[in-house]
Image (cartoon, rainbow, N blue to C red):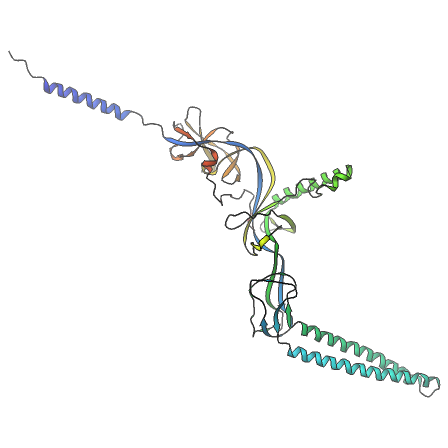
Length: 413
C-alpha cells in the first residue's frame, strides 16, 4: 500500500519558520550610533578684554588756506609722504606782493616824517632856553614826534602783516607725514570768508587706535593699575635701588600690552601701549574711550582702518575648556552632551564664560577629563548608548584665522 505524500505540509512548516526568523531579525536592535568625543581640558587662560576701534595717526594735521586767492599749483603727489617745510600748494601772490610794496612805502614815508619832526624838536630845544620859541611850541613838537613814532610802529606792523600774508601764499607742510587726497585743485578760489581745508597730514608711526570699553572694565583696569602703583611705591620706599628697576605704573610687573587684530584677521606684529584715557564716560553708551599706540614699521597700517583690540586683564587658573561648537543653547540654557562611563549620553547644563580662540571656558557644569560629544550631536540623545571615537580637543575645535570671538565684555568703538 502506498504512503501519502507530505511535501506540502513540509513546505508550509518551512515557510512558517522562515517568517518567524525574519520577524526576529526585524526586532533586533540597531547598532549604537557612532559619535566623536573629546575630553575637556584644564588650562590657565588669560582673560582678554576686546573692543572694536579705528586706527588714526598719532598726529592729525589739517592743511588750510589762510589767505584768499586762486590756487596756482599743487606741488605733491596725493597719498605720498611729505617732509616738514615741503611746499604743498601755491596761491596767487601778486595781490599780496602789491600790498607789501605799499606797506613798505608807508613805512618809509612815516620814518621820513619822524626824522623831520625829531629835527624840529632838536632845533627848538636851545631856542626855548633863549625864549626865542615858546614852551608850548616846543612841547607840541615833542608830542608830534612821539605820535609819529607810533605811526612808524603802526606802519611797520602793517608791513609785517603784509609780509606774513605773502608767505601764506606758499602752503608748506608743518611736519613730516602721510598726506591724503586734495580737497582743492589749481584754479579754485580758496579762503574767501573763511579758511578752506586743502588736505590732511597724518603721522602714522606709531599708529594710534581709538576704542571704547564698558565702564565696568575700565574700573577693573584702573583699580588694578592703582593697586600696582601703590605696591611699587611701597617697594620703592623700602629699597630705592629696586625701585629704579621697576615700572612705577605696574609695580614692577610688565605693563599691560595691547594686541591689534586687523580686518583680515591677521595680528599686528608689534604690541601696543596705552596712550590716554578720555576724561568722561559716554552717558549714552556707558563706555569710555581709550587710545593705544602701536609701532608701525613699514607704515602698513593706515588711518581709518578697522581694528580689534585685545588686552589680557587677568589669568583664570585651571579653567575648563571645550570647543564652542559643542555648547548648544536650548531655551536660553547652555548644554553639552556628556558621555557617562557606560557610553550613554547625558545632556548637562553648563555656564559658558570667556571665549579663547575656538574654545570656550566653562565656569560650571563640567570637569576636566570628562568626555563630551563634539561631532554627531543629532545622534546624542539623553539615555542613548553610543559608540564613541576619541579625538584630540584641538582637532575638534578646528580654529580659523578669524575664530577669536569677542569676550562678553567686548564693545564697539
